Length: 507
Image (cartoon, rainbow, N blue to C red; front, top):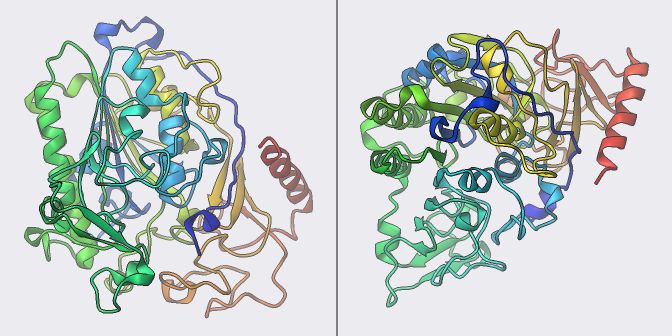
């Protein structure tokens, strides 16, 4: 099955709400361009809600990321707009649900010409902008030839500089790209990508189904699989160290851990109690620490907004479950699902003296809100018509007790949508709307092996014969989504069903 078949187009048009600062936050409307903060958005890949020690993990230690929560604010109800990465990355940069672009999510450039993006708006406002990490929003206007110039790409999206991975690190080509070119590529040794169907059965990476890349020895050697995030962290440190201070900077830093294949560097082997998965996360934590250290060394901490989050929920892995570590904690489901385990993510923000310190917020937040929130923090206006699915949450970062900005959002599994409205979550059909409880497609750990509990399934993960036609959960009283309340609240079902249909008809 092709990726575009799995990622069903789905979404909802949510109005943009731009609120000015109040309380003890600095009023953003009065921030001068010279006083604008530096901004770093750090995005983990497939990091679950329970994968940080500050969110409850006991088999691993993420002291450096935890320090952001101690010195800033930690959210307990933050969600990616989708349970897989590409739609979320688009929503972060464009403030929009991905179906609005109407571009195919494959390997070609996903942003359409003239689309307003967060880095482009900041760039126009005088920021130096850099993307250092996993891009995964495509290059070129057709399938890219990695032996040629890769344009359009991140630079056309508003970044002055790009260094990173074209796609996930289990997808070819297994190289780094800098700006428009593959790092270390030699004309006499070109890259060749071989489709999975054409790979010999005993070849490395055969099982990942994305194909492999061969040739280009120097380029491939420049991207050692177990040290990718360490290289990205070093590149980020170098970028920050080179800044003159004349212009604020915006860095989008999408790391690749803990996405499979799990590949910690040898110096991190055995450092956690959660198998190699925990080691990989502790390596990620150390990489985040390097970035925090250079901010301190350069006396930039006080004027830098740092945001840490993940692109979707975690993916359960058999040997990790045996250690007792659960990447998504007590949440139902995992990556790909519209159940909360597929999209509920850690979210931490720090800006000393500006946003709340040592606080926790239970306000609903979508990663699509990053665009409006960051622009508000920078004192930059949202262009008319841009980021229509982004809401300004800056006041919530500053004062977590203020009224909620967002009260509803769409959660997208790869086989359908769920609607969050207040404390209610409505799924218009049976199942996880992802892989976990799919009756025909098996991918990753099964419902039964994860040990999930839901009123519609038996202990073996088999859907009950009398399962209800749709699902309704109150996540305030039942955050694990154990009990389907569909039959108990027909009036809520009718209301949310109509609301979901109305919102998605805006497409």
